[in-house]
Amino acid sequence: MKRLLCVGVVLIIVLGSVALGLAKIRQIDRERGGADLQNVNDRVLCVDGFKVFQTIVFAFDERGGSAVSNIQLMEERNGALVPVRCSD
Image 1: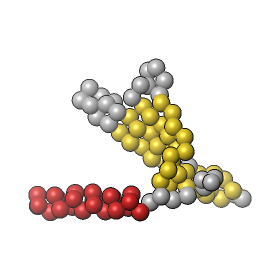
Image 2: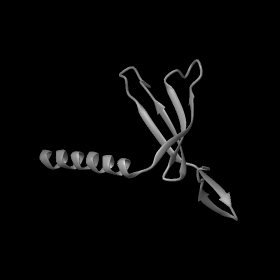
Image 3: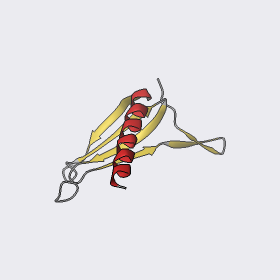
C-alpha cells in the first residue's frame, strides 16, 4: 500500500511537470501585499491564451505553511460566461 502511494505521488509530480512544460505561461501583472500582507503575492498570468489570477502566500502560520490559489478569470459575453482571453 505504501509503495502504491509513493508511485502515485511520483506519477502526479511527473505528469504535472509535463503539463506545465507544454503550457504557454507568461506573467501579465504582479503586485505585492500591503504593510500587513508582506508575505502575499498576487499576479495575473496568461496560460495558453487565457487569464488566470494567482495568489501565493508564504508562511501563513507559525509552522511556515504556504498556499497557492489559481482562479481562471471569466467574463459575460452575449449572456454566456466565457474565459477571459489575454490581449497580445
